[in-house]
Length: 498
Image (cartoon, rainbow, N blue to C red):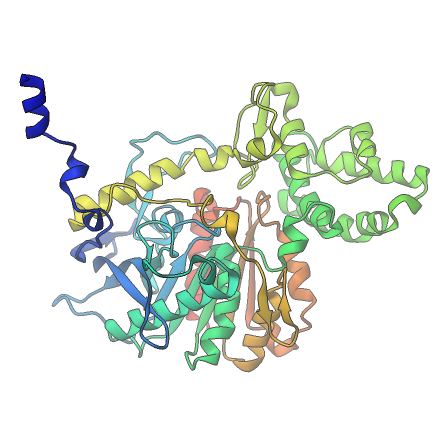
């Protein structure tokens, strides 16, 4: 009886809270803080965690998008409403914006340790290369990720798709600019990974809605989805090959005595001049020629000639990751192939599962999320829900509708959003574009981006508006400290570009 009485007095805390309170949107919270650079320079700024309502043209609520804003202020606490404003996000689709914030361009950054996994209590420092030096920043979590939520009666199929996602971000950006009185600010968008697909559609969509962009930053880009993500397509193998070569050189399997950029350039050229014609021939390629190409390829990527021949020159990413360091008992990463971990047990041979495991992701994501949660709670006093969906791949990515309404092409099931980029730039020739990639990024390989843009046949004057930056890094370029500094310098020049 005593136990029964005690149970009645102390029921489960979840039973005490109405169901609607469990998903209630917390009140906005902000704080005034100071960033200090390595040279002693300082920036006073206000950081605000809040939600932006995303509504359709009839005012019907689609969802509430979580935002974490960083706005520079003067001594009196006033923002400069003519200062550039940059909206930034990660990709997935189905990933929140924490990595690009607390890993990359936000005012605070988790300290990294080369290609080593960082501890859960890794120190958080003022980011010496924060974009806040050149622009105010608003980090947005896509609906269905982070603390962003769909409205109760919203149809996920209309949001979890290429065009619906871009539409939601366009509406959120316009709502934020209106609520914060920032329509006088030069407007930039900054996307990473799938965020570059989003950027591409947004470039065109915002222009069609009368919202003129000043600049766009594409970090670790993917434009032609089929060419990059579909093994069996020759462009997939062509794109992977230079990244494989860079990785083999990093681990001492190839390229001894050759400069890293020189080696990568040689692999890019070989892929187009030798590898592409061989792939296009298929089984019409004579056996002696196939062996000759395999021997050259082996010298680039560090896998045995016979292994390459068994696969008829077509080496897929998981095959490369599991075999390059096989003798060392290791598997290398996908997002950044320099990271590696112990190989998996023979019992764990399910291909899709192994492909989804990534040392580069494991090394840092937990520390980033912890730093973000601590910042929101301790610095801002923002009380978000207990669950923060860093990635919601099972609900968002797995059901994603990749089809898109491409300008001049109609509805296509697998978009090439480089067409959107070219359309936006032709309509707005004052727009400037930065494309950033890394030699060790096997998730969004650099060759594919170069190829996709070269097939748009932009005029020389528009090409001058495009800046290309290639670094010795992986997908999350900012993990690499030398790249962090180089990218900081390059972005400073890009933002200053007229």
